[in-house]
Amino acid sequence: YSSNINISFFHSADEFETIRQQGTQFALVFARISEEF
Image (cartoon, rainbow, N blue to C red; front, side):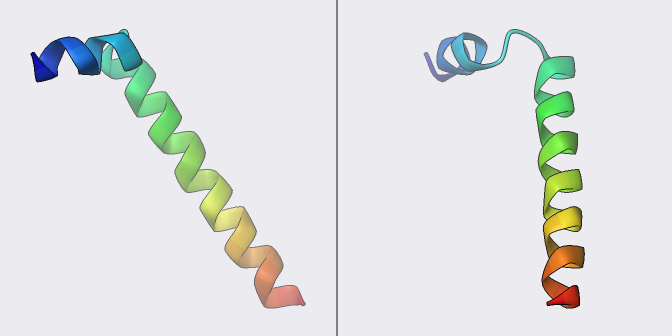
């Protein structure tokens, strides 16, 4: 049942990995901007 929920959110592991990497990059950029101010 839980696996079906995961499939509904993420069609593939590659899609999940892409979203995770984008979130990581955003966090790094946000941290870098915070240091400048």
